[in-house]
Image (cartoon, rainbow, N blue to C red; front, side, top):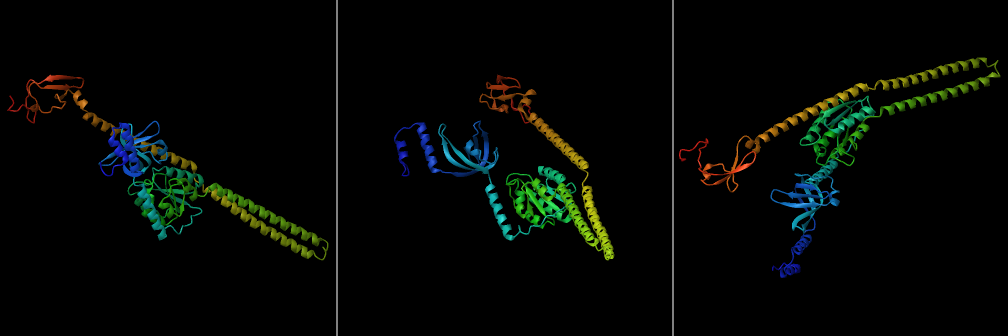
Length: 460
């Protein structure tokens, strides 16, 4: 025995043990030798059992190992893996004793590279923050006339934003600037579009939005070029990316961060009905104040007239003067009240006139939905035609289809396919397989053929 053998090893060597005892000993040895290991590889043969447990194979280009992740652990995973996914697992090395199979019992799983992505995120955030890029937030315009929306035309967030803007501020004109929000080159495209917004000067405010997704899906918004484009934009930028729990570098660079795309639209657009209600309340308060001041002036005037009534004879001139001043005050005050009321009514009328034609907006949205549906049908038809073409090619390559055209598959006694008559000799048994059924034949004579399929000159 080697010097490194344990007492248990010596005991196993001295006596004949059962297979179960051997597997139990090996399982104990693996448990003691490997606590928890982190392994990276590609998912294959993924299966979800009726019990809720996951079984799969983790492999790389040179080896593979079976894995099991029980329901109590896989319920904590933030995604369900599938064949071909690159993952990292935290696992215990174990042995499945009934079969003697070595396997990994997985405790946790994550997509491969997420740890490195998050580390890159923290490093870039720290560097840009130290540079001061996230400082100097700009105030948002209180009453924007036009709002730009930078997102993908296929994003569900676009519909949510346009619906919210139409509901809260129908007088605001939205302009959509389409860009890809995921995939290679998306960050550069977003930065270029923000630069174009600055040059065109069509809007008072920009919404940079997209729906939720994984860290990899949202990575375009963690690129330095996007953060610098946000700070360089000529108008304030609100960023609403993903869900409330999703945080990106773009959120820190934005003038205002919204938890969702819909919330970004609500922050950007003032509620028109709330503005109308506020104007109406101020007009009512102004009317009450003017009415109260008129009453006070009338009361003072009445008091003055009563005080001057007794010495009427000597004070007739003063009374006439007071009356004249009172009349002038009434006219002046009434004129100011009329001007204030006219201004209030004009403001209310202007707000009502600024409302767009909601029917035409609804018709436009319906027309866009029709165009999107037609495009989807066209795309589906194209995919179906491609599928039919591929199916026809597969049908043409199907060996059974070749047999159906009158050909036969010839194999020798060893079940090897015969393609050359020179390999045969008289008396050999052959197996013939047709489109339906088969037959056994014996070779009487073998004729060699040249490359054109004709008997050679040397054949008997």
